[in-house]
Image (cartoon, rainbow, N blue to C red; front, side, top):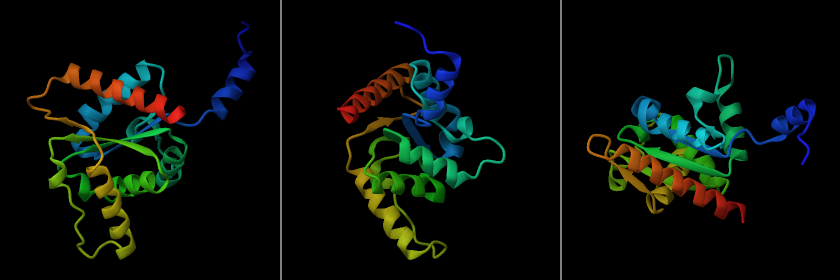
Length: 174
């Protein structure tokens, strides 16, 4: 089998979607461990995960880059954490994945699904609150993974999460 020329390889890279897996997370809670380690492990397997702090650069318009990545991803991972619902960006990303019919793998990290709530403090438009609540409810009632960052087995969690992502990618591609 012939290898593509460098020009052809560059064209293929440009034509490829920006990511296979979109990692939705609350940066302050999970960037340094769960989200970052998942990103690293998935990249090591040759996948193209999207993690904001790794894929965005200075000057990028957040919604432009993130919304495109969500639209073109094959699977999403929502890493729920204690402060997840305080983030407009997290809820926007989750609701966009739900509205686009993306398969979302919930990871409940140091939080129980029943503890996740979208609060209406009057700072967000009512239509956003409705969208966010619907997407959150859908994710809460989707079978996912749970992980306790203080007592959990990190290598076992990462291996299990990676296996789940790969199985979901295979199912989505069928």
